[in-house]
Length: 112
Length: 111
Image (cartoon, rainbow over all chains, first blue to last red; front, side, top):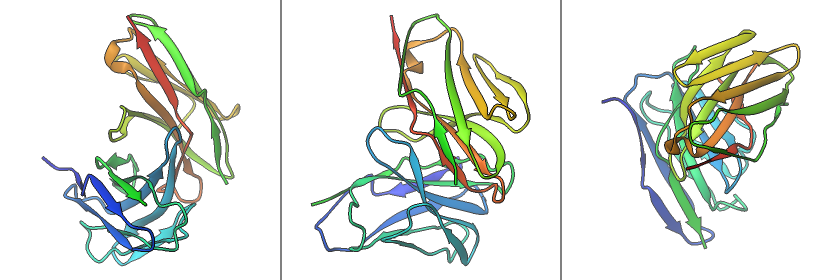
């Protein structure tokens, strides 16, 4: 079955370390996205990519970086510049029109 | 920019009907979507309205009025498994691939 795989499910890091979250999809979708969710809040867009080798900043891109070298993969790096990195990170993909988002199961990152 | 408002919590009993409202302010508008998220899980797509009117999918319906910048999700014949968070999301008018989400409505279904 096609889907989106995020790994790992839980991730623990010390403050000051960069960490990369993995996202792989086999839905053959052109567009991929990273959202951040904090407790009791909605999803906020970090970065999105509508085509390989191109990506755009979302609403909260500061302290994050991404790459899109392959259609199937869209890894997110949380850098030490991100002030409050502890959160639930969701990766999604969509076809370019109708743009319905298909989500992975998320990675819960805890930085202490 | 985009901003959306929806109630933070709604409670209903099994078998009842519940309506979750969403009002939005956008610099451009392409469509309104609804997603369901069970605690700790992945959001899943429920419904989309690109034009005014009602869309029905089984026990779930969604409505949009673009002139009022308003939409709602209607859940009928509520079941315990419907207890979840529900998010409305608008697609950017200039970049349809970019969606902005509301803060979500937590629905609790009681026996």
